[in-house]
Image (cartoon, rainbow, N blue to C red; front, side):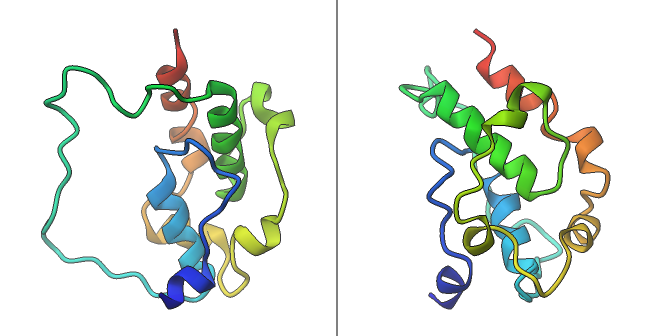
Length: 130
């Protein structure tokens, strides 16, 4: 429960799905938490097997895009030009990154260095193509 006090859920991230785990880990890391992982997978999550994608049903696409723009901003990733004006910075000091370690150190630690060139550029767009 302490980590939920140290890094509470960001109420400005409605409909966020992809990127939530990376963001939570980054927020904890920048607040001084040390993250460890087993050498072998001990749990998994299967996304297949459904006739219909449950996550995308009934979401507000504009709200989801704004949430993802906030995540990209928090993770210091490059923003799509379409999203630059959509960033909601309300309570970003309280709900964003901590101040004990820089976000770039986490991205390197997690193997996500250079993320702005590799991640979030096309995948988010693909989910919303109609």
